[in-house]
Length: 273
Image (cartoon, rainbow, N blue to C red; front, side, top):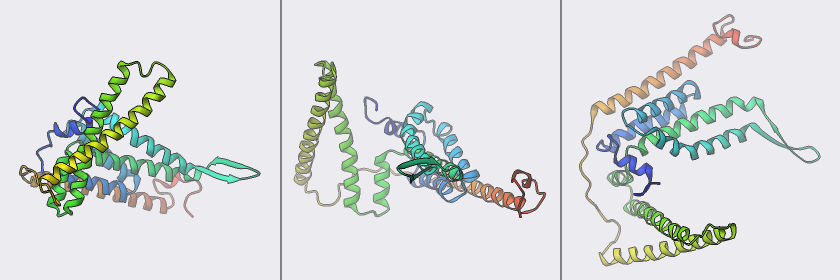
């Protein structure tokens, strides 16, 4: 988090792809996400993840430090999920926990797919502000109440972050973390104060909208974005190359394993019967 809000949101506003149409960027991001989910983890998922990473650090100019900070939480979640696949729980006079080596390929595939999918989504998140995404949802004829709820929640996040920062600074100035007991008391006061401010701000926002005759939607200015056929064509070509490479490599590996004495048969103990 920065002084102006969320670091990820700040990166999206300052991105060189900021002026590109959301649909164009969605074609690229969702195409890579589809490759990560539908293609074999190796090489399809890995290629999709590498492509998203290269695009973010290259043309999109996302700072590596920021990207690493954003990826920490998803990667921890993915790692916990992959490790849980390797664990077996049983009962032998008591609860037992062991490892299942045969599940290692499944756990590895899960990790590769999830990491590549997260990178594909971050490619869209680091280049497209939330306001643009909400405007594109409205243009896609998503019901106005759903878009408005998402918009209000998004705006309230910044209000809550500012409230937390203000209360926290006041507590630090009063030595609110001088001891463990004081820190616990400060944490409870922080939660209560933030909840009270959120409730008050939400009620004031509701009264303000009602005074303006709000019913279902509150349209705002949406600058026109021009389509880029070259960008879309390059995105489709990149996805197609990943698909063809993945399927071709998988077919070649399967055929090599099926033929005794093939180039990959020596890697399989006992060969193929």
